[in-house]
Image (cartoon, rainbow over all chains, first blue to last red):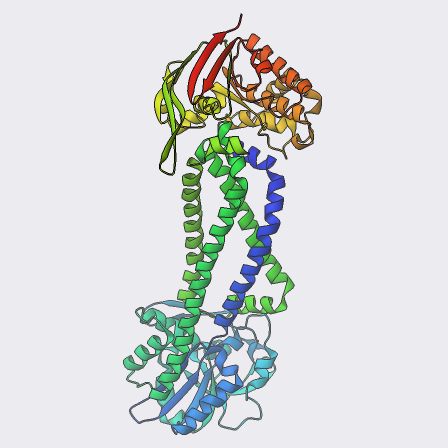
Length: 388
Length: 224
């Protein structure tokens, strides 16, 4: 190790030069990756639709979709076409960024822990402070001054935390809303199906349903591959039928999401190709020096260790630099990061993305090591010495 | 002692075979200063490269101190290049961005000696008369000075054999004389020197001249 450090130390001038080149490439690549992530993060999270035994339709816009005016209008059109009785949007995202309180004194607990259907412990964080506040989103909520039928539904855990019940007024930031009902998180559809709470053509905003409706469903139906699969499975289990029209729309969403998944895979492959190109360029540029080291008595492993350490150090430094640059120099990316890390994403996504990236890094390192060993062991030293 | 038996090195160009070495037989005793001469393409550099394990023979064997070189493991090959032989090349083969000291210290670091190497490095640099330029970058030196750094690097690990391939090929006569003086001094100090050269004057400084032609040894004479 000391030998390696000493060699790397006297190689610092090379490090500086290479760093500049790789920084540019990786920064561009990082920006492209973040752009794709931003597209993915803005993708519709899904739409829930159902029809129960009494042929009542429910439409649900999910996640960020409920803030998009076009999505709401589209949903309303479909609801009217199918003579739906009500529409609703899951507004959990707002509570992650906006203060939820009853009056001026009763605030929601920082953390509401809920035991899910399968004994899964769901930690539902709400009313976080310090993150970006989507004032434009809050403005679009038709709470105050909207029709008497509109209002807000809250899950029973949140109701308990706020000591709120039907008819109370609660505040979401500066917006005021009447609690139309309290629902059981494990039986959201059941609550909507109750005759006494349905008001035709009303819009409801639901708080406290997201985890149950999406993340829990992912756990409950682990074979589901797409959002569409999840809702289809849920609908079948709950005795609901997914509307054909809506199903088609959701399929389109799923197709688009799949398309972006492919794009992400392509981008990943591009990253591997880029790394290979960098590695090859690096190898060619340093081939003479590698021969020199071998002539002077360096083993293949020592030569590999020297150059791979330098290369990987440069890559790690570049990625760190690009990340820091992205976070601090761009408000857009800052907002994006806030949303990426605070909005409740599916657990599967959150758990597997970093692990996958780590796995990819490990595979790249091992591949580079093997490739480099193989190439270094075949260095044409005699020819290199003769024609330098 | 270096013993070369039936050494061949064949290159295939298209469908034609070309023998750079064709059944070379040679024994070099410890303490000799051997000049290998011959025209370009005669195989003298190939012979030197095979003795230094920079190249692999097609046939035959090279034994150094009783050890057959082709039987060595990659790790043993690295140790051989690091400790048993010291190379001096026509084009110096230095790290241009390193200091003189850094270049000379390199074989010691690769040998795992990462502590204070001042004593050995300075001794080698004093031997070639470059101690005063220890902290200058190698690329800023003249050709003659660079070759002296290369010699210092070759001897810093105290190898038994110095393998020099046209060490004066890129130098003027004054610098050539300095380099040859150093090699002669090293030989007198007990090092076995094998030098490839096409210069008769340089070859005359050795105590044995081996002449090659078309991959074969055509003459082998000792100089009194």
